[in-house]
Image 1 (spheres, rainbow, N blue to C red):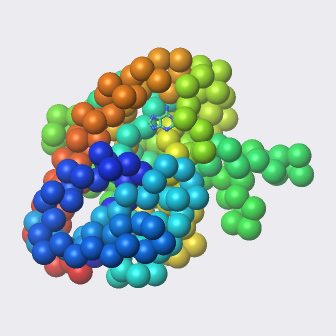
Image 2 (image 1 turned 135 degrees about the horizontal axis):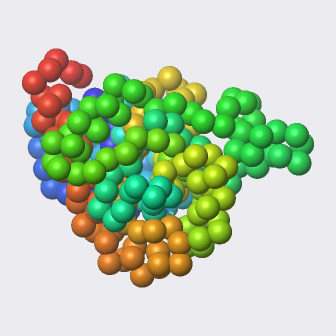
Amino acid sequence: MIGIIGAMELEIAGLRARLEGPETAVISGVRFDSGTIHGVPVVLAVCGVGKVFAALCAQTMILRFPVRAVINTGVAGTLSPSLGIGDVALASDVVQHDMDTSPLGDPVGMISGLDLVHLPADRGLTARLAARAASLGLHCQVGTIATGDQFLAQAERKRWIHETFGAIAGEMEGGSIGQVCYVNHIPFAVLRTISDGADGSAPESFPAFAAAAAAAAVEIVDGLLEELSHETVD
Ligand code: ADE
């Protein structure tokens, strides 16, 4: 079974509409819809915005459903000069840009306990999603995706995250879902289509482009599931 998490309804609704044999369970306030898409077992969830909701959802999904991989899909602000609105960012790894124990001598972003800044996404899953994006004619970049409990809307913060972590896109859940998957030894991928510039233009761009960008991400995930349907999966 593949777990698919989006923060917002618009990031998951397009997939839920394609679910066959749907069953719904609400756990800790999160709705999990399981069933099949293209015959592939999936569980879908809208986790809500931010790291705490995302972690709660990912951990619950892993405990309650037999997921062999988790995909976080949705939209992001671009931190990369080569990613514009509608383009695709895929995580080679995730960081949490608001994790900071540097006054204690740690590198900025280091997750105490794991002692890592960058948590690696699954290479195979990421490569397959990149191939699906390319087959849809979408421009795609693979790199670090930065997560924090902030809607990024300032050029200065955007530059700092890009320069500090080498990040290509910023959002609010992927790093948290990645951390939960990492400690549970579950492969994960973060797929984000660009909805805005993560700078002063973001408050206007996000509402204008989020739905279309999210729809493109849905098509990429759908393409992956279609591909998986030709293989033996559980
Ligand atoms: N998701 C989409 N755009 C974003 C932004 N600018 N900051 C954080 N998360 C986002």
